[in-house]
Image 1 (cartoon, one colour):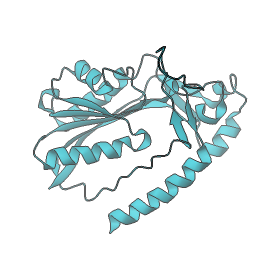
Image 2 (image 1 turned 135 degrees about the vertical axis):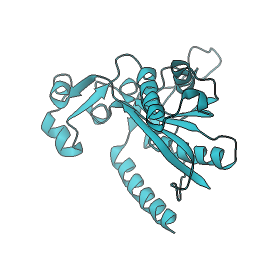
Image 3 (image 1 turned 90 degrees about the horizontal axis):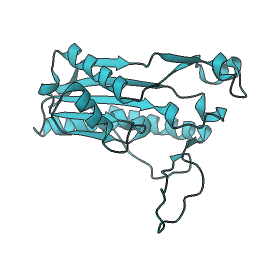
Image 4 (image 1 turned 45 degrees about the vertical axis):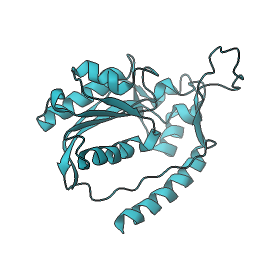
Length: 228
């Protein structure tokens, strides 16, 4: 027994920022960004991540012909929720009117895959029949907008699926590397008088070249693994 996707949904915030607009506030140009990334514009959240995550979830429920009351879990993959607590999943639950368990998965780019793996385990074990899985990010709230290296790469948006028992998911391979240097985002130490101060800022930092090399090798390895 495995799982299948019975409904999908997505939502983008209305504000779209073009490369030309970014060139007015950063030392960059449309040609520089597009030639290196293929990106022409990106959507930006003006009113937080919760509304678009909830809209994507509602669209997926409608597409699946299900209601929020039928969901046994809400899983949200995100590293940029509106609050540290309550979780984005709990905020979506409130927006949609649900009462089921709800939790976030903080696994960055791999969050949706982790969500699929967790959903499969819950459904196969019999602990859940219907799960709403949402992947949503407001990366515009995490980057340093005075620097072009990361700020030009990311946009905001949400996608969602409804998952049920089925045989569509044939195999999945996930893993993790406990290494912070290529990609990290610090948390503030607050003003605790007993904690050591954390030097540096709280923005997202990424070594693009190192991440690219690691991601390509890891994806090839995992693709070969699932094909076996």
